[in-house]
Length: 352
Image (cartoon, rainbow, N blue to C red; front, side):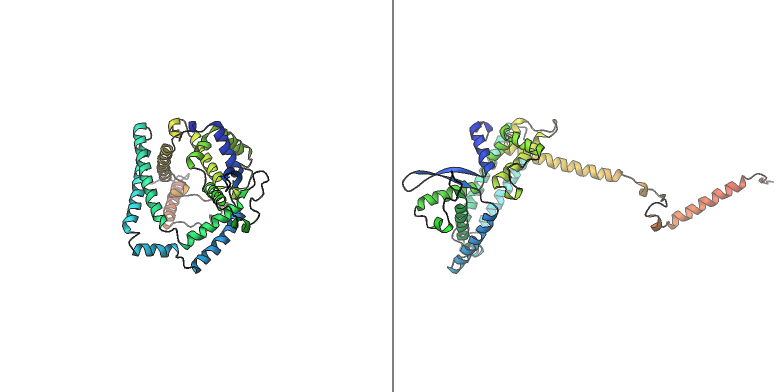
């Protein structure tokens, strides 16, 4: 996706949605009226509280006779629905995708070949997703899935507000569950669940490298102001994603001119990821070589056969002379003493 596909207004709106942790959506009610609601990301306490609803729903499902995921997998394997061949296909596709990604890293400077490899990766990813969805469909009636649905319903209740007042759209959990307009409530659930899944990564990356956002990001980094006006543990999934990709692109923009990828690569998500992966692997290998070379070539006083340790050194009392070094030292001192004595005045060497 290119940044040209998003207008200035669209980018500004998406940045606001991420910054404020939610968005206004219009959901049709039973009277065919479009009702505006504000759906927000649930964080902190709400997410923890939703686990209570999950546990209650899970226990209820078990009592009602629903199988767990593990039990269901075993059952379908016994019936030949989930086979070893299916798992092999998944592993094979994952390996092929990895191989194509490695190839892409080597040809980032060749646009024609780059596009062909990217298409191959997309086709393989589509096949993999199809197989995984097929596998997942067999697990839709498990106790865990029923509990997950109850958890999502609870989060939808806590994350749906009146757009003008900011108050809960349904005053209580019971009121939400008792909603008569099931179609309207279902529409809200879909909108909220979709939002909670996070914004498309491709769109977040467009925002992360766009000037309109980068002005805010750089200003925040230089002034120390909080990026979204909240503590880190309260960041939504989209805020974490935008912060991550902002840092990622900043590291790209900060690269040396002779190492930095071209603008066409920077705007191509798949090509840039392959380029940066290859770049970091090269850096890692170079760093390892440099460290080994430095260690092999590095010498200190302790590498020499003899080292002087002064009395002020904390190791002085613990030092012991090596027997070989001590013998050599005594021999040198004896030779030196003999030389001094032979040169004293009045002593002459007598020869015949």
